[in-house]
Length: 211
Length: 305
Image 1 (tube, rainbow over the protein chains, first blue to last red):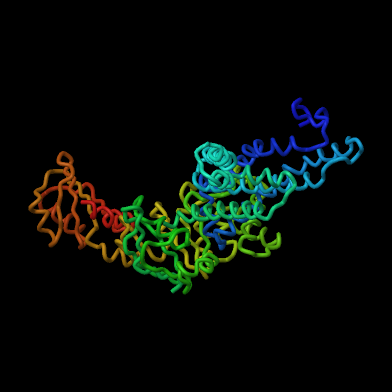
Image 2: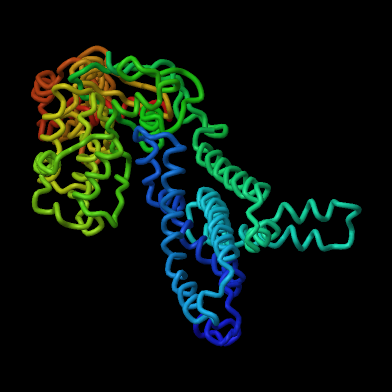
């Protein structure tokens, strides 16, 4: 963000952080699968999953532990971007001229996005014992969830509201809402239920060993 | 009885990995689980440790059912899986304190040190697990299994790939642990099983083909004593067959007059007398007594033929 001329904070001339939040999904599409790819794939490869699951732990404890660990790591990855915020606040004219509501909303949106991507990544990781495969599946899954519904919704084949409905299944639709600083309960519910769905699927996938 | 296994069956796809097995184990007993590859040893252990449920049948550990009281059962069991999976990037002490946290134990570092001492890892305790040699990794695996002082210890091939000294150490450790625990132990090294196990269960193709203590097994297998006899000159099979009743005579090497005889009774004296009476000379006599290896061979091979 400092160096890319297109979106450099210093030469962009506007006191916004939109550049960060618009490249966020693309960066996360690769960063987060890289974080989550090892969660279960590595355990399977090393057979340590057998070690973990024969300890007095429930599968939910294992999944939530790993999920929270991923979220912490992602939080640490996002944290340094505060520097952008501080510099924009300092360089603004007049000083401090930035839409705080939009920035906070965008950060929340970005974190929700990361949280969904992490749950997709964990699901993919639990499906395979190869980390590379887990990475590719997760990146592809994130891509699908983010844009695919939007693409489909844009096809001119739908009647009435159905295209809106399809778009609203994708992450992009809700991410845009929150990024504008509008934290709507519908979007929050969407994010939480999607995370819940993918974690539940992870649980099912882990439970497959018992079938 | 701390372990009761009742008609346990596990079916993978269409193949029966274990087929209706039942056995029991009591405190202070070391049970050796033997069998050729793919006989169902590991599957049995995975079921007992609640890694996966059986297709049918029940098993209980210390009175707790493995299907309904999974979490309680897991607390009672120390398990060393096959291939000893460990987190290679962790350090020995870090790993052990991680495992103790999983068990919600509040171990002081002195307690962890005494555990490290017990399994003989003092010199390696500051190393990364991935840099340890196989024998030391095995000890870390064992330490991990006994950290919460479980009532049941399930060890899947704990001694494969160890050097002879390490073997003795691990064997001593296991015998030492046996006092207040029930230990199930699988191995390919039959001499080891013979020397430390109180009871032997032999599995073949998912079925139990023998379940007894070693003396009992040997008693049952008396007819399997095989003698390999070598004479200087040729001798007639008919004459050999008459020296005792119920024996089986087979020539195994014509040019050297080596004959294999299986018999329940001790025929060594009769063989010597026969040789003298026929002016022949007995130049070799080897009796492969009914040790565990023979028992193992006979119970697992017969089924194939």
